[in-house]
Amino acid sequence: MPAVVGIALAAWGALVAGDLLGFAWVVEHDSLFETGTLPLIVAVPLFVAAWQLMTAAMMLPTTLPTVSLFARAGRGQVRPRLALAVFLAAYFAVWTAFALVALVGDEWVHRVVDAWPWLGDRPHLVTGGVLVAAGVGQLTGLTERCVDACRNPLHFLLRYYSRGVAAAWRLGLRHGAFCLGCCWPLMLVMFGVGVGSLPLMLGLAAVMLAVKVAPGGRLLVRPVGIALLMGGLVLVLATLAA
View 1 (tube, rainbow, N blue to C red):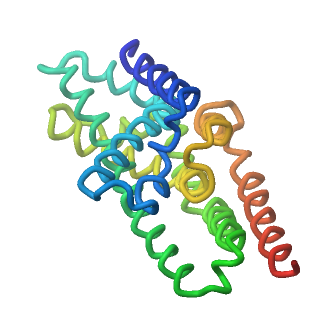
View 2: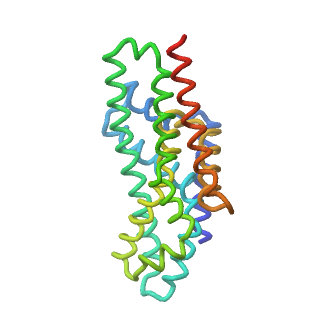
View 3: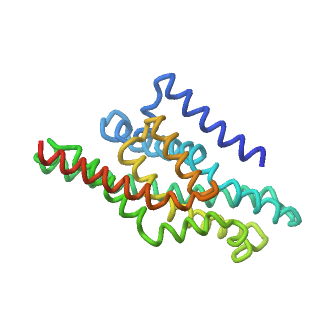
């Protein structure tokens, strides 16, 4: 567990250091892909590496209760450290898949904007649309069910845990899927609005940590969704009225 906590702290340290040293563009997919200065063979690995860093910083702290219980449950098996590493690798794989899907979606949005000058002159409509989509997602029953699963790691492990490295991979994928289900709206906001914005990363990470870990955190789900939805609608209407 100290190693896992150390990974999260090191990831935040790397993000802060990169921001202070002027390397924030490395985690901005627009800078990596839209400028055309980097070939895809370089830009894609950089994007994936940067996303691993952000996942470690933002999502790993929210999953520490589950990771802790998994580590305790696996102490008696043959290779407990390998099982824990595989569990975490599977968890990161789920969030990497989300990032790649979001990247493809972002490319599609850019193509639409480039082909539609009216929309290109009103970029805040896209931002507002992202906020609306995130707000709607936050208010769905699926998000609340996934939050319940993430907030009850003991129940999750009692239901799905089994020993072995292969089982650890499957469990990590399942845990990652639940985590994705409860946090994808806020991560979509970060991807679509503020990748590279350290204050936004900190704010969204704090909200996700509170929702998944803090007492009464589940009560934040709907207010956050309403705030995102209203903020997106206001931005869209204000842009159309301008």
